[in-house]
Every structure is written in C-alpha cells, then in structure tokens.
Length: 309
Ligand code: A3P
Image (cartoon, rainbow, N blue to C red; front, side, top):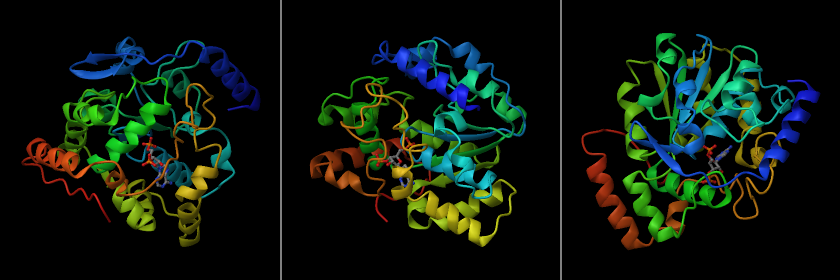
C-alpha cells in the first residue's frame, strides 16, 4: 500500500474514532458477534477467496498477531523491513472486521492487497465462508489454553472500546463458560476446528507449544506452507517475533489503533505473553469451579491443552 493510502487510512480512522462505541452482540446462527459484523453478515459469508489465500483462524487472544507476523516473515524470507511496510491489520486484514465508515472493512482491504494474502479470522469453523474449503485454501488454527485465553480476553475487553464491557472479573468467568462473549464459545471454537483438522488439512497449533519451542513451530508452519528458508532466516524470524521485539514493533503492537479505540494505558495489547498468567487471576475456588465445568464441556474430545509449560 502506498504511503499516501496509508495516510488516508489513518486519517479515516481518526475521523471515525469519535463514533466508536462498545458494540452490542447479535447472534449469527447462534454465535454472538458484534453488531457491525452481524449486520454485514451476508457479504462476509459470500466472500470468495483465491486458492492461494491463507487463513489464520483463532479464538480472540490465542496468538493471532504472533502467527500473522511469523507467516508474513516466512513469506518475505525473514525481511524485517518488508514486514514493517504497514500495520498488522493492513498486511493481514481481518475477514469479518467492520467499522463505522469511512474506515475500510476487512473485505475492502482484502480487495487491495496482492496475492497470496494472509487473512485473519476469529469466526468459528461453521461460520467460515464455504469458499475457503471449496478452494482448498490453507488454514492455520492457533489454540490457547482456556484459562490464559480467558484472562487475555478479559484484559483486551477492558481496553478495546469496540467490544462489550467486560464487567467485573468474577462475572466474566461464567460469561466465558457460557460463551456469552464476542465470537461465542471458546469450547465450541477449539473443538470445531480440531474435529475437522484432518479432513480440511488445517494446521492446528498451540500457543503453549509456540512459547515452549518457537523455532520448532516456525519450522512447522514453513513446511505446511511448502516454503523452504535457511536456518539463519528461521533464527531471524524467531528473534523478530519474540514477545519483546513484537511489543516494541509499532507495526505489530497495535499502538497504530488510536486512543480511545484501543486504550493501552488500561491494558497494553502486548500485555504479558506468558503461559500460566491465569494463576495470578483465578482464586482456588474459581479455578475448581472452572475445571469442573471444563471437564463437562470438553468431554470426549482429546484436545491436549497445557495450562503450564
Ligand atoms: P496476553 O494478553 O496474555 O499477554 P491475539 O493476537 O490473538 O489478540 O493474542 C494476543 C495475546 O498474544 C496477548 O496475550 C499477547 O501479549 C500475546 N502475544 C502477542 N505476540 C506475542 C509473542 N510474540 N509472543 C508471545 N505472546 C504474544
């Protein structure tokens, strides 16, 4: 995207900021989505991807931005400058993103970037437009253990003025358990992609594995994308996508979204980037209650989550 276009994009964001509000959730086929998404559902569902498009799908706060950065760097042979050409949300637009005009929607942005495109989505499996499966697009799914995912989502809801008010922490846990948050149930989300992963050739990754051994997971992504980059490039990608480096990278740390839309003084987008932060939030009673419900909701699905590494 040209410098001029980037400028007009940020100007448009500034103008529209004043009208940003916490949008209510409206169910689409039973899944609560922000009203802006629900009201534009038909055009999202009708999206026709190119067979070369790559979809990165996650429940919000599972490591989407991290994976977007890894993939963009792999496609640019580890070229840091290429990946600083624009903010994450322009390099790799969110399929279902809609905002008050004149901010371009995800669909608008996708029309203006070159193939192969990296497309982000938080849609659960059953709401992914069928064109992705018909065209056999590659899909990377990243899952994060429920407790850390919940904590990260809670802090994000506090700082993100698009999403409904999180309310107090005690009440947020049952809302998560009931799937009453934007993009619905975490449990259904992670299970939906898991059961389809082989049939649909989905690369299913875990945030905890990425933290444990980022090099191994970058190589896994590289092989899935049929790419081959040198060991030196892999090392560079691991370094450039460390939490510390991404937190300092203005093209990846979401400081490009202006206050008051994202208020990093409430909670930074790049918050902690750890496994096990849930222990600083859940009381022993909350943890017990959550674990018992978790057993019920995840029964019969052998999904190997780790809450500590
Ligand atoms: P925390 O809130 O736990 O810190 P998403 O990109 O899906 O919105 O996920 C955001 C979460 O991923 C945040 O988690 C953020 O800090 C973390 N994250 C982003 N980049 C990361 C990286 N390079 N390494 C580890 N965690 C990262």
